[in-house]
Each structure stands twice: as structure tokens, then as C-alpha cells.
Image 1: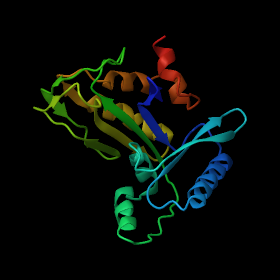
Image 2: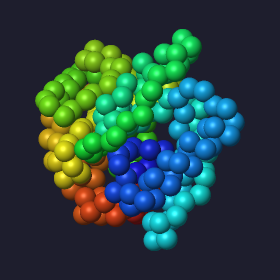
Image 3: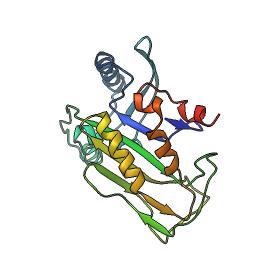
Length: 213
């Protein structure tokens, strides 16, 4: 899901496509990389027509994505390690089956209603810590979020045996994440986890905008 055309929630595997379409997209992504002799971490992005179960190429990001954690959680791969091993001249075999379901919430220092930046000194920072939760962060209590850079403070990721399990862990993790000082979008994350459209899995990138219309 997106706000201001920037991602705020990502999940894997996508609930909006069939297994057959997923295989076609994976094969197309591999062909795209092979066609240009690409080496290293990269992400092929596509636009999907959920009704027709078809897709078109959008772009390729030739780098490690912000949301690479969801891929790591469902595959068990360490993409950062693999990227370094390729750079060192190795050819690691990184093919993997996916298992379970992962969701990532980008925790921003911003107003959760209008999405204006909310910089300030962090007076309290308490990350959730239990099975199935991963937090990648760059802040702690006492740090100051300035208005000069991207407002991303942390990536809160949850992993479950299936999507329902991941959603439940997401609710628990978002509720347990305490950030005081700068404004933050944790209330938005909690709101989305109780949104019927999102919970159903039948949603699109415009969901957040519709809830703020």
C-alpha cells in the first residue's frame, strides 16, 4: 500500500495473484535480467491487472530494495550476504522455495492523517521483541529525527505460517511498538490492520488515499 505514491506496507506473497501468474512473473523477471547480463541484487516491478490475471513490466531497480526483508523472511535467504558474495566473485546458488507469509510496515516520522513530516527528539523508543517479529531501525531514545532527510525511522516486519497469522502478529507488534516525541504513523498501521479491504487481501495501492478522502 502507498501514501503520496510511496510505499508504506508491503507483503509477500501477494494475495492478489494466482500461483500460475506468480510463476509467469518470476520467469519474466529472470529473462529480463538475463537479457541485459545483469549481475547482483535487483528487483523487477510490474503492474498487475487482478481481474485479467495479467501483468506488464514497470521498471527494474538495480539495487537492494527497502522491502527486501519480506523476501528474506519467506525464503530464508540473506540477500545482503548474497549481494556481497556476488561482489566477491562467487556464484552462490540462491534458488529457494517460499514458505509462510511476511508483512512489512514502514514506520515514518509523520502525521498519520495528513502525512506531513513530524520531526523531533525521540523521548521513548521501545521495539516489540517476540517470535515472528523483525525490526530494522536506525533510531533510539535520545535521537532526533531531523526534517532534512527521509522520515523513515524503522521497518517493522512480521512473519506468520499464513496471512492470517501474519496479520495477527502485525496487530500485536504494532500495538507493542512505542515511539514518543516525533509524530509517527503507527496509528495508521493499526488502522490498516483492521481495515476490511486490507484484511481480505483484495486491495490496491489506492487504499490509504480512499480512507483519507
